[in-house]
Image (cartoon, rainbow, N blue to C red; front, side, top):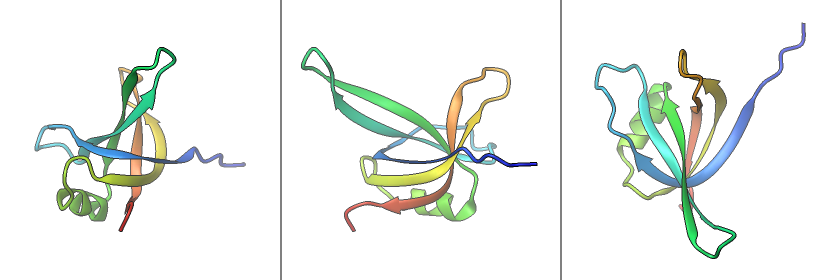
Amino acid sequence: MVQIENSVTVSGLLHFIKGDKKEKYFPFSIRHENLWTDGTVRKDFLTVRAFVPEVQERLKELAEGTAIKVEGVLRASRGSGDMYLSAERLEVLGQ
């Protein structure tokens, strides 16, 4: 049996999401500001969940808007089918 991994790497600006303190993960998003076809700047957000304790602790030390690179696996939420990135590694860019 061949296992296919859906590992991805994404970089952008850290954006905190307020989550339920009972959750087992640390929710946040990565913000991208992209030039759109009409010349305006579009802000896109990728939802990310950090389950790994080391990644959670590192995130708590960072400020909103910090440039980061996240490596992880794409997942789908149960029920809604919304996609999110499950963060396995975090790197702060520009340090």
